[in-house]
Length: 476
Image (cartoon, rainbow, N blue to C red; front, side, top):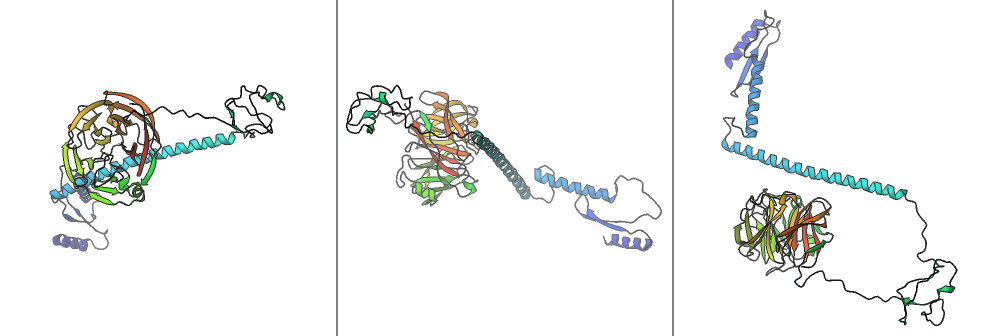
């Protein structure tokens, strides 16, 4: 470099101040080393013949292109790598790129959901505007009394106080004003002033037909309006699961409420509340750290144990609340996991566990079933499959599912505010059928629906909100 600078000084002395000014250019060559280039205009030649190299500018451009190629190769994990970049750095870049792509997909999904919510709100506003205009255009009619003073009282089902006689006929001239002479009924005996007489109606109560059989089980007839209990405090609670043990054992009672916020890569915290009142206030009395992470919103509680799917696997775990340890583990045979056969809302909801009057159930799918829902009854102690049924409805076509009295029910949509329970499969007969029972997604993102047989309620997690629904069952 010193030799190059000496040559530059000599050139300046040769050309002097009368010539055009010389330029010094610095840039990296193909190998990334710094290179200095000194240029001066020719005193005699007006232009240079073209060369293969293209001059320093072309070399600089090539150098920049080479650096861009190296950078692109780093980001895409290609085969072209910088010799100075270690394997650890390459792995770090690749992991960062994978995480960025995952975050981009998650944000894109949230954006689409928000856009759908905005469209729905806009449609609702437009409907309300049209309804307002319609009401404004309606004329206002003067109100009239329910019973005109000139029209006598008529009722074919009224009895006199202290008298068993029933009015024997309807007044035939009720439409005539001022004509009261024909209103007297010989069966109407009274004393004193005839201008005022007390009447009363005899009502016979007829009991409604029973909607349940002697076992308390039956087919689902209707679902009540959602009742909100609490809203989650942070983004981790957008999706979640909450439970109460229908057959609680010591040391926790049946009023104890358990909650898991399921947003995150290492979901392991289980929050316990003494009752629903403490849940609504947000005061947990117990916080347990599960030994292995939870996958999605498919957990359930039964006979003093938490049942859940281990993250990124088809392994089912039984966590004993009393000993705070894993009591059993078993793979659910051939079950899809981590996004192979989820519900329509996603969330890695491949395996959904639930409890009803008959015990512990798993709702999932397999490659053999080609995505159709498989429902299996499990042994609550060992987690072994006792019996399985394959249905005719695809798992990714429904938003959620639950089991009541041995019957599987599916929810059509997780975002529509007014959707339906659209399918029922009876494990007793092995037959399924389409149904249409109204169901409300009050907060328009229902990520969990489970049944509690002790309370006869559905528990749900709807867009940060912990809600419940009353259910009504019919005959077995």
